[in-house]
Every structure is written in C-alpha cells, then in structure tokens.
Length: 439
Ligand code: UGA
Image (cartoon, rainbow, N blue to C red; front, top):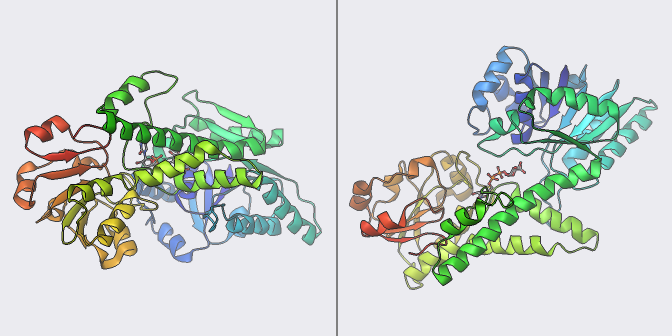
C-alpha cells in the first residue's frame, strides 16, 4: 500500500513515519525545501523522543520518502493525508488557507480513485470545503476522477507521540463511503492489535470529536486548578483531593494534576476555536469560556505568589527558572506558562536566569537577550533570590540541595508543578510554595 502525507510538522511527520513502520510506503511532502533536504539526510526538525531513529530506519528500508512535490507523491498513492498547519486567525478561528491550497493542488493532479484524509485539526465543516475545492479543480480540468473524503483527527501528545500513534486508545474516522472505510481499516489494522476500536462516524461528528476531546481535557485541567486555588484558601491539599476523586473510574485519574496552567499548540488554540465555532452558530459555550479564563489566571499564579512574597517589589531580584517548554519532553514553547511568568517578572524589574534541558534554543529565538541562559540548572540559581520550577522535567525531580544552597541567596522555592514534598522542604528549612497545597 502506498500513501502520501502532506505537511511534515508534528502530526504529519509522526503519522507518516509510523505508517511506514508497519510496511506502508509513505511519501511525506512539504513546501519547505530546507526541511525536506534535512529530512532526506536524517535530520528531523523537531524534538520528539524516538522519532529520529524511526525516520532513519524507514528511510533506509525505502519505505519513507520526502519530497517537495505533491504531484510526485500522489503517483500510485491510495490515500493522501492532509496534515498541514491551521494557525489561529486574529479572532481565534482556525486559518484554513494551507489546507485548502493542498486540496486544490490535489484536485489539479488527481488521476485515479483516492481517499483524501484530513488529519489537521480543522473546524466542523472543513471536510466539505476540501471536497468542494478538489471538485472545483476537477471541473476546471474537465475530468471526472472518483475520490472520497475522510476526516481522521489525531490525538497524539507531544513528547509521547510515537507511543500514542503506535498504540492509540481509539482511531476516529469520519467517512461517506464504504470504500473509504475499508481503506482506512486496512491502513490502521496494525495499530489496533491491542483491541482498541476504530470508530467510524460522519464527517461533521469526527471533526467535532477532535475539538471536544481537547476541550474536555482542558476543562479537567482548569477544573482542578480552580479547586487547587480553593484548597489553598481553606487549607486543604489538592493532591489528596485529586487522589480522592481520581480513583472514581467515572472521573479518572489522568489530566487532573494542578499546575501553572496548560499551554502548547493545541489546548489554547482548540478551546478558542471551539468557542468561536459556537459563536458563529449563535451559541455560547459557557463552560469553555470559563476554562479559558481560569487558565489565563492560572498562568499568573506563580508570578503573583513570588511578587507577594517580596511585598510587591521585584526590582533587582534575581529569579532562577527551571523549565521553559510548555511541558517536559518537548522543546515547544508555544503558549508556555513560562513565557507569561517571565514577561511579568521582567516588567517588574527582576532578572531571570533560566535553564531547560532542550528548549534553550527555542527560548533564545523568542526571548533573545531579555533573560540569562544557564548551562546547568544550578548555574541558573547562582545568587538567585528565588527558584521557580515551571516544567516538570525528570532531571529536576531530585534536587542537589548542597549545590542549591551554595548558590542561592535564600532557601526559597516556588513549585509550579507540585513535584517536591512540602514536608521534606519544611524539614530542610525552605520556604516552599506549590499549587493547591499548604506552604
Ligand atoms: C494535547 C492532547 O493531550 C492530545 O491528545 C492532542 O492530540 C494534542 O493536544 C493535539 O491536539 O495535537 P499536547 O498539547 O501535546 O497534547 O500536550 P498535553 O500532554 O495534553 O499537555 C497539555 C498541557 O496541559 C501542558 O501544558 C501540561 O502541562 C498541562 N497539563 C496536563 C496539566 O496542567 N495537568 C494535567 O493533569 C495534564
């Protein structure tokens, strides 16, 4: 079986490579020539554990190809996956220009029956637009080439993308024909050996499923963050509350970890886009509006606490920051809580010295020389007045207290992810603040 995947971002590159891993011949397409030439040399443009080896292996086995020519990639392809970006417009709605440009190009080059699969996160109704764009081009050509549209949202998480793709909880596919269903079943069969289902539905429902899934997860996070803030006020411990509610299987114990707010390229964007979709249909998603505003507030909680500790005066204070990416195992800093905290600290006249295991180059690109970049976590703490932990990378889990105490001006830690034990901190003489737990 041969397929094409258009777009070599997170979703496209991971999907294409994982399909190749099961023996499918995959050609990945991207307009960015530099990216394609790097990929052909085994250099991958993103940090994703395990991906580089898998790309190399499949390129060597001649199951995975990279090109800038969609036309070339389409030759003999039974399915074409569209996995290009849908950046948010200024008003929060997803911009479809890349998706529709690819659809038109498919229409200009389509030769025989093909299933065109949308994998980008796109608003409800996009599959129909893709179909129309292809049809329009076929009409211009004066030909009738049969094709089907499918919608196949992706649920992988950055940092765990390969595992998520190879062993998905479920595959969701929106289709309009049995032929397309058969093809999608064949393609995904190797990934569902664990008995997890492929759920077929109509196009609109599958498009909405993607947004509803991310919105539900974001809701869980904002809910627990709201509860965490209440815990602090009444003197309860959110970790205990989490365990208490999470063991009820109807609630579940995942995605209810309180912290400094959710970030990344998906939750913030998708929550906004879903609110916008509802508004376009004169409907208000009240819960999601609150999810968003709770998260905006939560991203500032750690900063606010640091400021309160120093009685509102951060002028000349040096703050060490551990972690910059929006979560561990990625160099992605899009919508990262660290950026909100840094911006506010700098605005108040503090200096920031930061360390992240992989996101330093990304931070330099975004922040330039606004902050100091340390070569190690402990270098960041030299002469620091406070330490903030903002991303729970494994390497921060065990602190070398001796080194920390040699460096820091005082024993003061703000933990934005609740990874340290308040009891131990107290015993060691630290002033320790976390989220939703007693200081
Ligand atoms: C998310 C979804 O989890 C994926 O299923 C989805 O496919 C993806 O978006 C997407 O639409 O492409 P991702 O953005 O990679 O994946 O990251 P998550 O692991 O979901 O974390 C998102 C944010 O929530 C992070 O900032 C994380 O720190 C935060 N989070 C997560 C919490 O604050 N508490 C939790 O309990 C879990």
